[in-house]
Amino acid sequence: MNDRLSHPGVARRRALAGLAGLAGWAVAGLLPASARAAQIGAVPAALSRPAMMSPKALGAAMLAVTRAGSRLVAVGERGTVLLSDDHGQHWRQAAVPVQVTLTCVTFADERHGWAAGHLGTILHSDDGGQTWRKQLDGIAAAARMAEAARASGDAAALADAQALVDEGPDKPFFDLSFIDAQRGFAAGAYGLLFATADGGKTWQPLPARAANPQGLHLYGLRASAGQLVVAGEQGLLMRSVDNGASFEALPSPYKGSFLGLLQTPGGHLVAHGLRGSAYRAGPGEARWERLESQTAASLGASAVLPNGGFVLVSQIGEVLIAPPDAATLRRLPVREAVPIAGAALAADGGLVLASLRGMRRLASLPIE
Image (cartoon, rainbow, N blue to C red):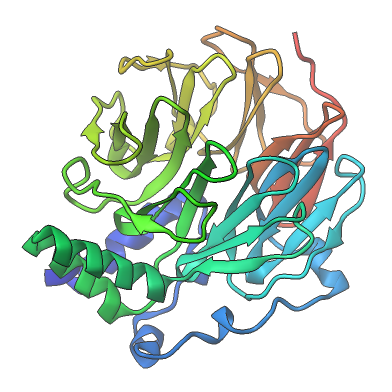
């Protein structure tokens, strides 16, 4: 039986332990049990109030950053979204309809993007991040999971879905991946895994219980036309080759939590996580090669380089670069190490970092 149903106290500790891999910043937005109980049946204020527009937003805790064409879009605490049109030199705040902490952001092209985070929230922009609309929240997500469970006739899945309904919209999403402007996926706490085939007009839960029977937290996913790979808590790795209709568990080289997943232009996957752990698999392969990160800090952020290499950033601000096919990562000198949660390569080649003290930029990378 799922311990979230039978032992709530144990489940909350497990959730906090898993989320602690994100250096505590994701935990800060979770509601305590007493607050959740008071909100059951009610819409949390953070879902109905727009993010505050303030000059202080430029110093907010930022958790993710990505490219929308040449523009940079970053997201963070209390619904903060920042935009830069000069490669991260300067930032301005965008209008957002919620005050929910946003943990991830992705764009399928220069106009169409999605951001997601706490309270089961998924937002959409069709103007390059200037404005956003809510497509999903935890209330609707739980209801759709209950509908899917009833239709499947799976009693255990229905019990899990009913628990989500009863507990209220307190479960966060942690990652997004889109194949194009119509097809995308979102993953989060307690095995939350949703898909859309219409640009987010509708989001539907995916049947991943067979590959994740414990409902472990899902921290990273990458989708391509051929497969969807998901990484998460306790070394969980799973894959779908039929657009999410079914999943298989992959043999894992590591029993600690993976905090992220990246895919290189050549199709290689890199899973990275706690205590400097990083592993790479070739296109379509299930065998993972250990990479020497030379750090004991958790690797929570990553960015792909145009030459097929990649960058991993630790949560204490170390920047590690891997040339194509290299098995050892090289540490780059950083003037001011700050807690980092997200990374992206700007159009001019600079590395832009989302930190708990606002946005940072490294002018250039030694790409070989």
